[in-house]
Length: 322
Image (tube, rainbow, N blue to C red; front, side, top):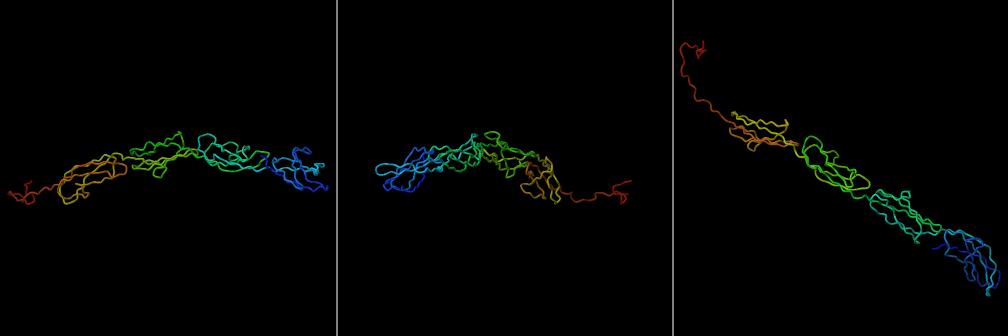
């Protein structure tokens, strides 16, 4: 677990029969708890030291008989912190109303780690992207890593009702419910946020509008036409060579209607009997009715003659007026 290394160098002993050197070291002045024996060289690398600690070093020389010199001067240094690696996991989670923490492992294993989320020590709950910073907390090791914890919105149920209505001149919004209940939603009708009034079919799209949940649904709102009353007046008219249109009334009044005569939209002029069909042609109303139009021709009398002209009658008063 200890990974720091200190390299020492010294001047050679002036004795001619020196065969080697020893390095002594410890964590306090003149308190040496460890030693390293090296050959007849003037440097040594002391490894396995605790990172971030103060160490004190001295050296001695010895001859072939094992006789050893006194300690040299003492030197000391602060070993650097060793670098550790941190690996973050559990970075993709789903919202459920509970805090979502990342997990951290270290190399070397088991080092303590402090985690922050968007600069705070508490793990986040809400859906979204959260910056995670993991830092080694140790007097021997250093290391940190930054990553992103993503909490995805949970799936919500969303349901539509009130998809069938009849025209009455008012708006007809659909009813939206969610599971969990009460989530904010947005609804469009044929791409517009305004609920329609006119009869017709409208594509309804509803979607959840909250950070922690997602969900959408689409269906068709059908507003049927309201019934209208149509009255066709059945009449008999005398042929005069002119078109004779039927008389049609609607309730509500003034609705546009399409009128046919025996299936033709041409108003008849000729003598005959015609079935009149009047059909409401309005976006919001429907209705139809039939009647009969008769065009008859009355023949004039035969030749007109004067049967008698009485005496004493003036030409200006042939009927015998006083």
